[in-house]
Amino acid sequence: MRTIDWGNGRIIAIEQTLLPGELTTLEIDTVDQLIDAIGRLAIRGAPALGVAGALGVALAAVRGGDVRAEALRLRAARPTAVNLAWGVDRVLAVADQGVDAMVALAVEILEDDVRRNRDLGLRGAKWLLERLDGPVNVQTHCNAGALACVEWGTALGVVRALHEAGSLGHVYVDETRPLLQGARLTAWELAQLGVEHTVVVDSAGPSVIARGLADVVIVGADRIAANGDVVNKIGTYPLALAAARAGIPFVVAAPESTVDLATSTGADVEIEIRSPAEVGVPNALNYAFDVTPADLVTAIITDERVVHGKPLG
Ligand code: MRU
Image 1 (cartoon, rainbow, N blue to C red):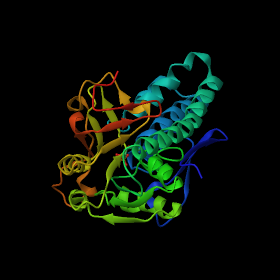
Image 2 (cartoon, helix red, strand yellow):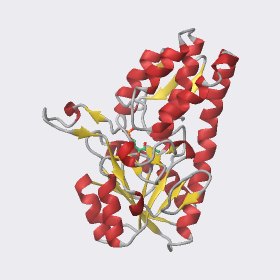
Image 3 (cartoon, rainbow, N blue to C red):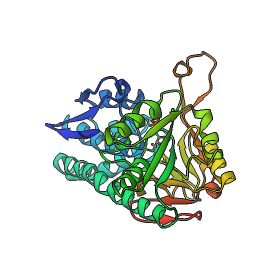
C-alpha cells in the first residue's frame, strides 16, 4: 500500500496519526483538507511532503481554484522540509499548460519518488558494505521509511536493502518524542519487514552508540544546506556527536529534492516550532528539527550520488 497516492481526482493517504493501532486512509478532496493533514502530521516525512505539495497544486487545479494562491498556502503548511516547496513549485511551473499537464506532472513526481528511493537504498547498502562487514547493526531516528515517502523509504530504504542482501544485524530505533515517529511508525514498518529491532528512549540513543551496539547511524533529512549541514528531526544532532566520538559513520540518506542549494547553511533554515501540547506541558519549547553540522556527517547518499563531508553543488 502506498503512503500517498492519486486516484479519481483526489489524494489518498495513510492517516499516520492513528498508526500502529489503526491502518486507515484519508480521502482528500480539497487543499484545506490537505493542509490540515500536513499540519497535524497525518501526512509527514520530507519526500511524502514533496509529493503532497505536487498533488496539492494539481488538486487545486482540478477543483478550479486560484492555483497560485493555493500553492502559497500549501508551501506554508510546514516550513522546514524543503521538499514541500519543491513539489509545489514544480507543478506550479506548468500551470500555464493546463490542468491535465499539472496532474500528469504531479503523478510523475509520485512515481519518480518510488524509483529514486529504491536507487538510493541500493546505493547506500553498497556503500556501507564496501566499508563495514555484515551483519551491520544500525541506529536510526524518527521515521525515514515508506511512510515518509510514497513507498520504500530513504534511511529505512538502505536498511531494507541491507536486509534483502542478508547483511543486516539489529536496528535500534529512537522513540522520537514527542510524536513517536520512531516507536510508532518505524517500529511498525520494521516489524512488517521481519527486521529485528529494539526501541530505545531518545536519551538512550547516544549510549547505544557508546556501548558499541550500533555500527552505523543512518537517518533521513528534511533539508540539506549547500554547505552540507543536515536538518532533520530533533534529536538527530546528539546521535551525530556520539557517532563522531565512537568513530562510527553517520550517514544521511535523502533524495536530491531534499538538497537546497539556495540555503547556504543550516543556520539559515526555519526550524518549525510546534505546539507545547504535543509535549504534554504548557511551557515546552517544542523545536521539531535540529541542525547537524556538515563536519559530523560521514556521507550524504542521494538517488544520484554519494557526497563525503564537503559542500554540495
Ligand atoms: O515531523 P516529521 O515526522 O515530518 O519529520 C520527519 C523527519 O524528520 C524525517 O527524518 C525526514 O523527513 C526524512 S523522511 C525520509
